[in-house]
Image (cartoon, rainbow, N blue to C red; front, top):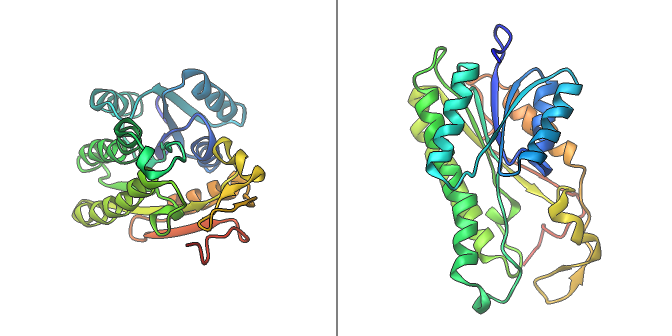
Length: 254
């Protein structure tokens, strides 16, 4: 599936649902050719179909971002079919059960770190290998952070730790990519309306122990922010952007 002349190629992880799906659809509408990555083939197919219905171009690759060989195959498929990768959106992520700290198991911790942090590292490393050597050289990486990269929710230690680490990865990627024409930024999102946030209308545990319903925002507004970051020339970069529900209790959380 060769892209049209001068088409730019975007690779989105976790593209089968939520923020990844909405962002992929928005990028396709903006003229990008999409590589959709995720573990669920059926969900990826639905995203692909919606992009195609809208006149966009997309290919789906089943991939577990925690698997090094899977990530290598993902980028090999992208470059073999499309020739290059201009944008990587490291979006794939999971959370752990909201249990008291002492009830967290090592497997709960490890699964979150593997997906949210190690997966982003593996994809970033492959993106560097591609972006450094393609012509024209360079590209952009956008990491999906979180408000938890700054202020945690109660009972969210694995997720919060992973998102703090993503900020470190973003800064290191920005520095190490500078001489290769690779820009890296981070979007920190608060309460996008996805499958992961449907419970918020029923009440979310607050720092004072109370349960409080929290507002959410349309995931398409987050996607618009991602497409803006992606639209900039490589000479310009949004280093960090926060997009959140205006009335959520993030300001003053703690």
